Length: 530
Image 1 (spheres, rainbow, N blue to C red):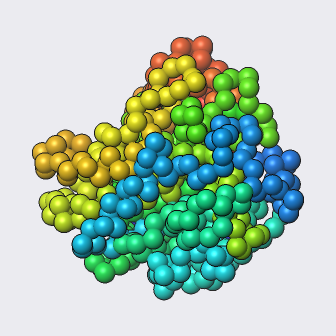
Image 2 (cartoon, rainbow, N blue to C red):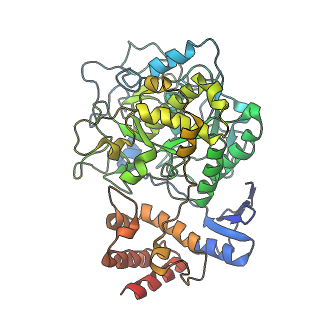
Image 3 (cartoon, helix red, strand yellow):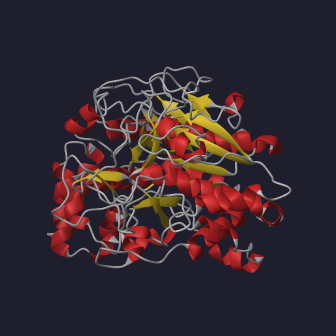
């Protein structure tokens, strides 16, 4: 797959030869999906089109965004609403009773021969002036910036301040992945690296100004750069991708994730965050994909990074999880109250790192350590996707299968369990037959409601897959649709009753962001069911 960029991005169009084009729309005032349908209808060579929109589902409340801009934040205090070590302040998440990342690092660093594992860090960019920045591990020459209107070869964070900007997010996640030794607010007893310090090369790629200003095409271009440029040469091949971001569905994402998986790239992305269960408490994309590992959150006392219904608030971030049917490829790491580089204080870590953003680089670190220890065995596998499955097998099979202080099963909140990086290192690379049986089906983004009701020949006057991709976006962003179809066990909408299906179609028709094409399909569904 290759991409072509045209000024004034409005739609991402996929042709029959799998070329992704970023196309301008003739009517910038029309609905974004209607623009995509217009692009599709205009050119017989286009097999699929989708809008290039802000796909983020993380919209922090005003009070929280304001708080992050005040220099008076007590960076040396844990977030009191979540569990934390009360006896003494310490860097707890690395310990053997938690993620085991320190023990796993020590074991790998003691090896006489170590391969270099290349990790792509997709985020808001980096800050080379922050003391946590691991300059000896970062390959600036390979870094890229896919934010519209910015320098392609300058992936530094612009630190644009203001409402919803969330500057320094990339600095924070990179500090968990590979933060150097430096002071930690309120903790004087810790003298070690926060993250990885050997046997890795990090390629930072800026794909967003903020976690809440994240365009679909930026991730498309980043994945395209990985699978078609970096992976075209062995000397720049990518082994692990970490992205502490996510949002709405995109077919172009699915196509490129599928290719990365086939090339042996282990991808882990954040499960997503919510405030009082909104805009969604469920996994977001690309974490929802089978071929991507979803990073969920476990707290200091091994309880879920979630509040029971009725106990959340619009000023307290929680981690996403579920439905249970999607947690088969999920794993939890520890958050909140972990070290996080403070972008306004270049010489300091705070101890208030939170969100599934903080869990994601921990899982990427464990994957890289396993890859490094078992490099020769992994590289000798006959198919590259088996590398991904071997790493996942090690992480998933050894994850801690427990959950405290909460009712229900750990699988619902933690998927395969809580990361145990040192135990994972002990798992040998499985036999080829085992890995072949583990191969995941290709990922898609469609919510097949239209074909479920109207059949394969639905009679709608446009691409049905486009309608169902749009519907998946609505389902994750519309609270009323969420309420109707939310099921803690499954994302299978075929279980909806006839009355629920009619209500679903009515909600589509009433949604102001739905395209006219999707509303027309909803009308046909209502007519058939009533």
